[in-house]
Amino acid sequence: MAQTQTHFELFELPVSFDIDLQDLSQRYRKLQRVVHPDKFANASDRERRLSVDKAATVNDAYQILKSPQRRARYMLELQFVSFDDEKDMALDPAFLMEQIELREALEELNHDSDPISSLNQIMADIKKRITAVLDEIRENLGQAQLDDMQKNNVKQLVHKMQFLNKLQQEAEYQEENLLDAL
Image (cartoon, rainbow, N blue to C red):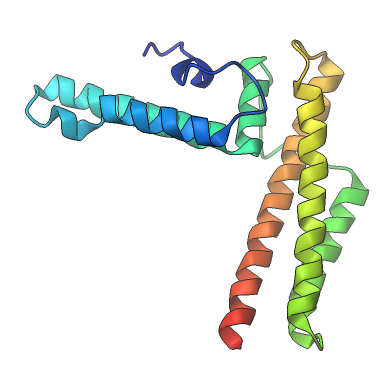
């Protein structure tokens, strides 16, 4: 496992946005059985440290590849696209307005006559938006080499996914609160 090895190479997968997550999980478990520190309990200090490092590398690669947003970002980084989360968050105003409206709708659920139904509609809307962004990412990353415009487009989509994932987490949290109140 050389340091220059990509996450895709580590798991012996082709570089692709579409990954069979079940296959990835199986490959992850297989690699962890080989490098897990417990297997090196009686080894030298150096071997134990290397095992911990290798296990951490496998864990990190797995976490990145199993997440569509993180996988897309990683694929862009493989094409030398850098991310600066502080400066790169300039998204189109219409998208940001939609985010504000969806967050306000989540906040107002407690005043709704049927908050569970309203929340289900919001969650379905968020899921639809996530699916649309993922489809657009998939379409762009399906090409062997991206031009600068495509890279910037995918970069914007990755940032949108970040917002949508956060919004989905907030909706799931709200769902737990509503169900706990029943």
